[in-house]
Amino acid sequence: MSEPPCIRVVDVHKKFGALEVLKGVSFDVHRANVVSMIGASGSGKSTLLRCINYLEVPSAGAIFIDGESLGFREDHTGRRTPRPLREINRMRRDLGVVFQQFNLWPHMTVLGNIVEAPIRVLGMSRKDAVRVADECLRRVRLVDKANEYPARLSGGQQQRAAIARALAMRPKVMLFDEPTSSLDPELTDEVLNVMRELAEAGTTMIVVTHEMAFAQVSDRVLFLHDGSIEEDGHPDQVFTAPRSERCRQFLAKHLR
Amino acid sequence: MSEALKQSLDLALFWEYRAVLLSGLLFNAGIFACAGLAAIVLGLTAALMRLSRTRPLRWIGTLYVELFRNAPDYVMLVWVHFVLPLLLGFALRTRVEFHPFVSAVVALGLVYSGYFAETFRAGIESVPKGNIEAGRAVGMSEALILRRITLPQVVRRMLPEGLNIFISLFKATTIVSLIAVPDLMYRVSMVTQQEMQPLPLYTGAALTYFAVIFVVATLLRRAGERWRLGTLI
Image (cartoon, rainbow over all chains, first blue to last red; front, side, top):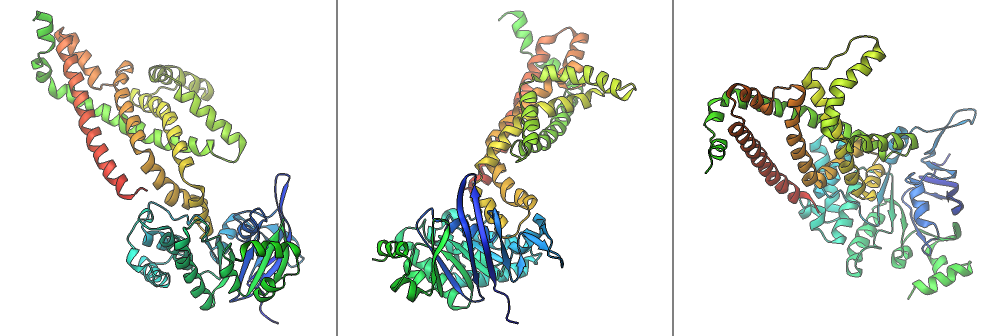
């Protein structure tokens, strides 16, 4: 039997009150694949990403990480019981998240931000955690800023530090939620370059982005519209011959 | 200068009784420390209840804060010392009596926990939600997030306000003489009864309190600012 997909999203719905933001979304992500999610604001792509690690709890549907369901346990008879928060927390370690607003902890240095979870959550020794942090900082080219506080860094540097923080947990999948949207245009490249390198190194990634240049180099592009996947394919196909009219319109606006 | 005025500014009498009087300060300090600790623990608990997702907990938290924040400390002190033991005694069907020190700590701890609760709540609400989500995303438990992410930022933010509450609390410890805790003020009245010269003793007490509060608060404020500015955005 082939290995289960790294991430399997099955018929995920999300409602906020009467507003249905996700209307049944399903897709698989395989190891070492880079999937970009594009779409207009309000299309549900960020909500979908947040559902994948249960920062938002789906109203219906299921998320599987390496074949194991995130929200519930299933016994041999197929009966489902909700997973306690403790187990959800344990499974979340496998999903690194990079946020639009970086969300670095302002009272800790860059190094402090990176070693915090490996020490407190994974139980790593401080020495080991610092070694892992050094390696992650090298990957995002931020070794010289290890002892700075986030407030003293540029947006691009903060986002690279946030990427290093997520990498330090050695996650199976990296989730990026519009990682360059709150950066000045001249700072987006340094973040995108780091992301490209991660992709080339075989990191499994799901990226919500407005950067079509990045979407074009991913393995697969999902176009979301109004809470559903409208287009799903290789970037060559999606960007040159989209099947959906809405996707065509969206790309016409964003590809210039 | 009139004789009375001259006498009231003459600190010789206060100096003569300095050992007895100043050892009363230890009671002020002890009550301050115990009530301050109680106020912080209870205040944080009440703040977390007010911010809870469970509605009944929110109600209890709000009721608690409003009750104690709006109770005058003198009234609370008398009520805790004289009425609460009767109520407890009635409920437990036994005779209950509070040591004055205990009553003082309980009363002041409750009143000042009301102030701390509001300060904690404002501080916790000011921590960006993204900071907490980042904690969840790396698999931290809610308790760990509170301890490592939220509270360290809250403490830095509430430091100036918290220091003011502590100063008020220290000042409030001077009313415990009313239920016969032998603090500085209590001892001043005792010596007064013997010497029949209240004015210089009260002047001495006022100057002592002022000096203690001024020096300690200034040192703490300086240390706090240095620590806060070093690390806060």
